[in-house]
Image (cartoon, rainbow, N blue to C red; front, side, top):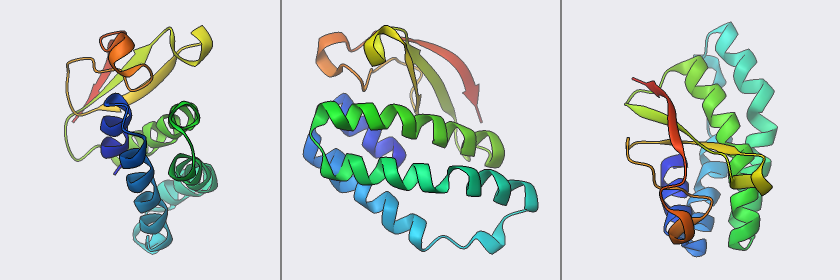
Length: 133
């Protein structure tokens, strides 16, 4: 669902981003933490409330606010990928101009840069910083 939110924001599709973000909240409510190792549970517990809050904001906001919360969501999902593994090839991308020129990162299923923070305005702004398998 995270990748679907990223793709919706890349396409400047506010409604799709909201719909998919709402699914993240539902999925998290049904997540069985008893399947996690002690270390994984610690990581998940540290990001759980922030991830839910960001998903809720994306589900209920306009695109500019969605993109702000996607930046925070991306940090949480990055931490999860580091702890749990990706289960697929993912790219850790970074745009130095996002977030009022403070920079922001995201995870992508494609090596090609498609920026979710600017959409068509600056689609290729950014670079790959890391790859996960």
